[in-house]
Length: 230
Image (cartoon, helix red, strand yellow):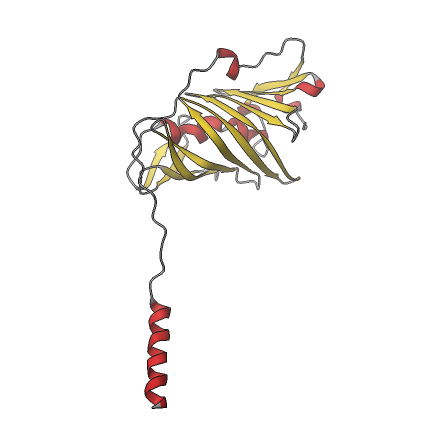
């Protein structure tokens, strides 16, 4: 009696061990539009070779390449504002009445500001129609080779350039028919990462012109490469 019972228990345990694991399925999304403008609250997690910091703020984006990122204290005071368009980047520090402005290409490769200069590249998948699930090789707008991995909905899951810069996208949801991820994470290949968690995005709403262009009236202006921190 004991031997058959042991045999039965062994069989059941073996069956439990070889049972295939359940892989969460990606929720199908009926994407009918692309992102032309976006505003959202953001939680920031920034890690550099010098340390890490977390902050909150909000992001404004306008296709094809204009953005504004406002970084605030827990009490809502503005620490800094970053404005980008094409190859230019401006860092506004209201507390010091200073603006650092210049070309992104002029920055050193390991400059942490370079991640913010990549916003146009990072936002590209949101402005495109879904692709074919799988992996695709292509060139960026600047002619740099990149690899894009698309999920089952044809939405970008990961983008990697030949130089090792990587962007990852998690948790897509639909807003006005356009797919927007909950989380965007960018790594520059030198150990620096920026993680943005988007909160309550508003998509394809009309933006005022001043929302994505800095006003440096009354501020001292310095070259971008002189920026040392907030």
